Image 1 (cartoon, rainbow, N blue to C red):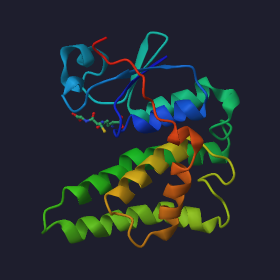
Image 2: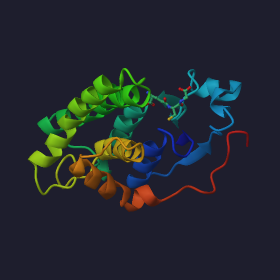
Image 3: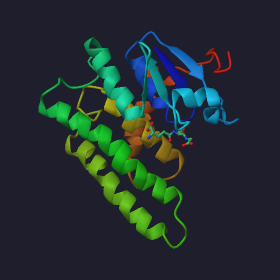
Amino acid sequence: MKLFYAPHTRAECVRWLLDELMADYDVVVVDFENDEHKSDFYKTIHPLGQLPALEDEGNIIIERAAIMMHLVDRFRARNLAPPPGGPQRAGFYQFMIYGVATLEPAAVALFTATDQQKDAARARFDEVITVLETSLIDNSGRSWLFGQQFTAADCLIGSQMMWFFDQGLLEGHDRLIRYARDCADRPAFRQTPSDFPTAQQ
Ligand SMILES: N[C@@H](CCC(=O)N[C@@H](CS)C(=O)NCC(=O)O)C(=O)O
């Protein structure tokens, strides 16, 4: 199994999940700063030249939510998703898709808003993020999206919360700031890859 990765990109949450799963995997660092993700070589891996991508038994998977949902099934014994077929599994899919399809576009619209668009973008972001915050608050005392069970949805949404916190988007959302800190304290998150080979090697 091979993860195509660059630090501080959307590949980080997949790297984190692989470490939570204690998976045996290789990392290929793609030099994002020098546009290596747009190289002919890398476009044979990801036709859009984006990170992350995962190679698993010769198959390439793109889109991090899809990669992560695949990984929890691939390493089922590690229990990083609620059991298939049940209501919590449906909630797990819901958070994975909400994260990439609803929350992230609202955040990107806010980062990129012109002065004129700013108020509307902020209102939309707050509306969307309240769904997540309410869900964490409604279950007081619980640490993760699914109570005491840490799941891959926490790797995805937790990474987004750390990103949004760094961008100053979480002001006033205390529960989400606490959640982002709890995620950042996970030993598997703090594990930083240092000796990975680069794509040219
Ligand atoms: N929907 C994709 C988005 C991937 C993505 O946009 N990755 C960024 C890095 S954080 C990237 O590769 N950007 C370069 C580009 O879009 O050309 C996913 O979630 O995997």
